[in-house]
Each structure stands twice: as C-alpha cells, then as structure tokens.
Image (tube, rainbow, N blue to C red):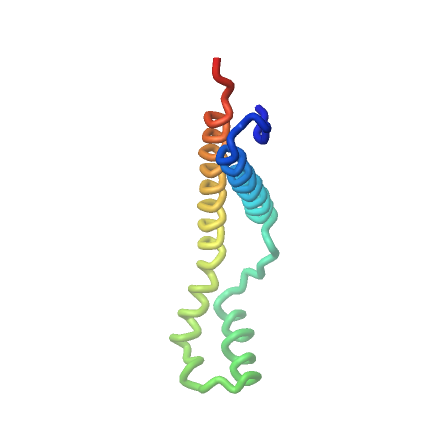
Length: 119
C-alpha cells in the first residue's frame, strides 16, 4: 500500500496524511490508556475514621476551612466520593480504550479501502 505515491492526486495524498496522523494518535492514546489501566497508581484504602482524621480534622485546621464546611455529614460525603473515585477512573479508562480501538478500526479500514489497488 503506497500512501504517498506521486501518481495519486493531491487530495488523496492529503487525505492519507490526515488519516495516518489520526491513526498514530489513536495508537498512542490506546497504548498510554492501556498502560495506565493495568499499572494502577498506589492508593491508600482509608477507613472512614482514618479518612476523617487525615482529611477532615487535620487539613481543616491547616487551611482555615470554616467549621461548618467540615461537618461529619460533609466529611462522610467526601469519603464516599473518595471511595468511588477509583471505580469511576477505571470506567473512563476502559471507555477511552474502546474509543481508541474503534478509531483504529475505522481509520485503518478507510485507509485500506481508499488505497486498495484496483484490478
């Protein structure tokens, strides 16, 4: 498959260049997202009591947060968000992997069809 043959019209060479850049970008995104999905960053699994001590009690005094902003209810909501963040992060990584795979298939197919030798 010769993408940039001088016999091809200019529009086909430009289209092939754009599709090739798109294909390379999709490949890089797929590889980096897959690596980030399988090699997880270390996460501390705090219990609520540990989380409250670290993030609600100590930090509240360090950054002068208003007392009502760090109530037990607010701290519990923040802890639930903290607990769910890993699952949501994995969800978005998987959707990015699927999107990149779809990009690879569609762009690769278009490039193949566009540059298929005519018999």
